[in-house]
Image (cartoon, rainbow, N blue to C red; front, side):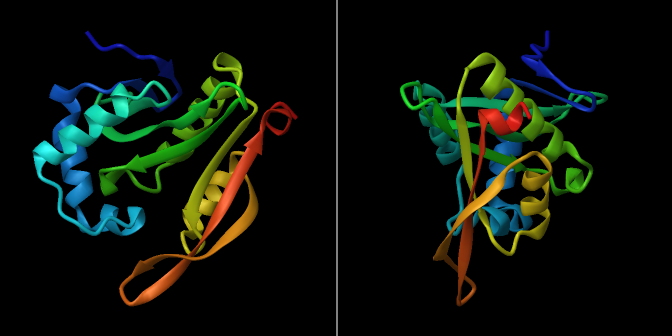
Length: 179
């Protein structure tokens, strides 16, 4: 039986399930297209991927969901909140569509909407932030479409292919979400 924790039009979010999801997450962490967007530089074994997921899930300050396509029930990526601070009512947003065949179909934007709804309506958070490479134009546009604003630039924050890249810090506040 599939547990749909949060449901949208084309996707739903459900709890991570090692048996159903590990293969996709391992593939994503080693796939060159996905690695480029996440700035991953080392290969991951299946055991390392499982260990990382276990660490993320066991941390009480994280909430993770597998993104699944509604029609097929196929897992396509991972999203969630890290470093949830219930005193400051803030968290860091993460999303990755691990199968590039599902890129540019609106799934990432829909997953972002679902996480924001969960963040503000259920967790009663006040601020969600993220980091995104400045040159990730599609990503920046998708985040802006969902109400995130560029708050600053981390200059030369990451290194890849003999070049340093700037990253945006983007955020959305509760009052902006409800506007």
